[in-house]
Image 1 (cartoon, rainbow, N blue to C red):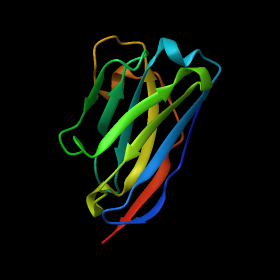
Image 2 (cartoon, helix red, strand yellow):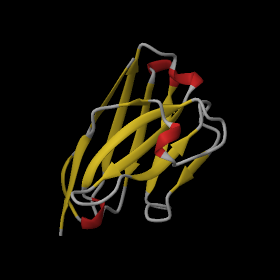
Image 3 (cartoon, one colour):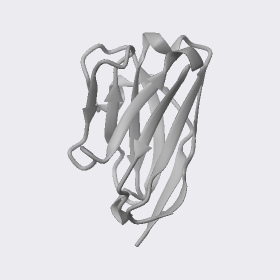
Image 4 (cartoon, rainbow, N blue to C red):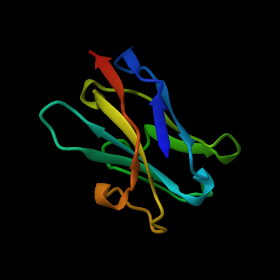
Length: 123
């Protein structure tokens, strides 16, 4: 199983990015996708969850209304739209999958993890 996160980059405050999470070796529709981030010197933070069918989402308070999860199961890919970015959003962003049905941003519930993509927001 592999998860490949991509789409990170350097953006000015107020800008947007779209992250992708391409999965191989598993049927992504059977798993929820979580997005997490970790900034230097800080603990890993769960930012979003989207259920296998895309019908349920959950967001951290820090990104609610600015970030949006989506997925295309036909392409075995999940997405995270990052809008109105702030310098405090700077972090390495990871995607992960879980078979847990109820929405969760708790990392130990996630089994497979991607390698991360860097998002840097300048002020």
